Length: 409
Ligand code: ATP
Ligand code: MG
Image (cartoon, rainbow, N blue to C red; front, side, top):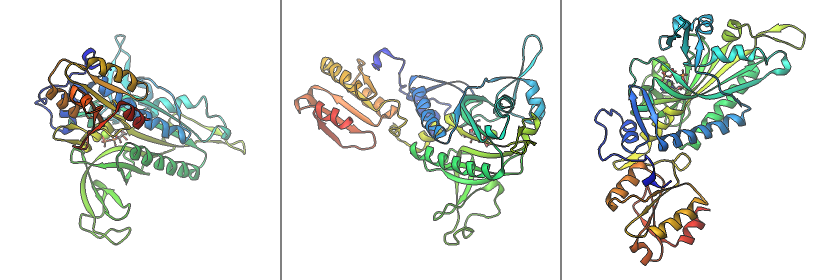
């Protein structure tokens, strides 16, 4: 993209109302705009990141057999009344049509996907199966703060699976847990896995995927040596206790952000919506159901919390809106345009072709945080090429254009 022709316009100053790093930097660098508390517009840069995170999630869900669909956000009240959610879920947004019909905005999709699957799960031959979608969710959160970490409208990947036996479900559950760890690793995040109670609708165990950050809203206890990790809200241990798993190290306490979780839903929704299949003996049975969420927009906010410095964001390459931030200085537009076109052939490039000072261009490149900055100027050309700098380093290298193109391929 040629910056002069876009609405990519980083701000000189940080927004005054920002209480977290992700809110401050995402607004200032031009990734998002807040419409009201917990509700954001994703601008070109922000949408690119959101889509890249979604793509990584999509690839890993596809690998564990997830089939992607897209379910609606607007739901009839009846399905929510059937499961008790209409009266029991305090964050459920309720609205009325002009003819007086009660509706809800999806805060999750069990109520939509379970009756849908009645059409497709008829016999044991149709199991196991799993369905997911990446869709906006609405929750009437009382305290929508921390930028995009807690929205009242936010992007979530939610997957649902159905199984003949508890055993089959357990196996799949473990597979998805591994897939989740892969997702977060690919995104550059280390997720710790806590075992937690499944909330109000089931007494089954669930896993929460936590990334350490002060901007998070959960407190966890974990062992620095092994995988032991629990959410403090349910924990029987405390900070400083010897790890009950490896018995080697003392437990540490830290703030974390819950970026994902997986739940055992048991038979709750299968029974509510009378989803049954015929087993091998010809008997009618309810399938075991699981659900698996990842907060896509929260993950984006968490990435900013983890990867930033005093100058701006440092996106991991895999989710960066562009791989290269091309800066042209002075009168070198022809040369820059040629290079821009060549680079476009191999990667994604944001070209700062604006008529602003070098200082502004460099500051904005740091703020936006693409991994590689390439500068074309009279000086760089005299020295034999372009200046290349990693966002995370101070060192500047002079590279020939040919060398740069080769490096990128
Ligand atoms: P939390 O405890 O943070 O409210 P939750 O347990 O209600 O989360 P789920 O209903 O399981 O979360 O949703 C799945 C995932 O969606 C969460 O792990 C989180 O990453 C994300 N998520 C949940 N609520 C929000 C929100 N208000 N804003 C942004 N992301 C959210
Ligand atoms: Mg919640």
